[in-house]
Length: 241
Image (cartoon, rainbow, N blue to C red; front, side, top):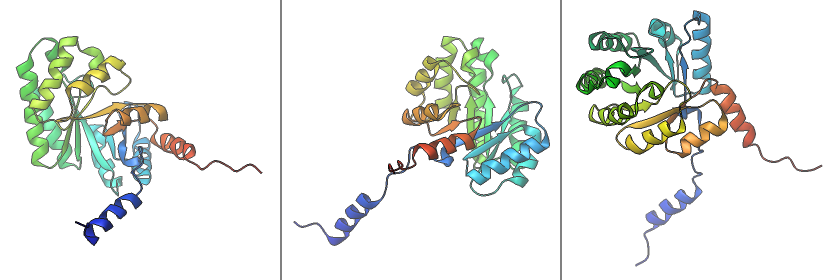
């Protein structure tokens, strides 16, 4: 039986469609979390992120209103909950999440309670994440959990991965900074496909490696520089004169 014209056209279109590039601005995100940053710094970071088409810019809780007013396009504004070590009570974290969402955040980055996890208070940690997930998903908001793997014991890392899946967390970031490769390898083994992964990287090669490993997004300190380096790498070779 000969294929229908429609089937042939679909096949031809698939061949003509160029593959999606490994790196796009929509796969990068920026955390604006320095304690001494001024309003001007935050505004400049949000403006740059939107101009570049960065996936998300994550700001301090007190900066959400300003960031939401300044943002445009496809860039999401997010905020931190329980930063930096997750030691706030569950009630405070839930309030923080609700408050940030009310003021314009569309992504919540919640820091897992590191002390409770290392103390083997697993039910406490799981119930906290379940409540945060409920709040976020009620408002169509993405919930990411920051594990802080460099401060967790080995058991804590394994249990945290299981809890994230059971709690319907959307994505996980090992830490807001570099972590040992074995921590990332553990996350890659234990979290997908139910929980998406994001890694922190500070170089183009590092970003590309993270994406090749299956990360859906990469947190970077200087996204404009990463994108420019990617652009330069993909320029056609200059013909000899």
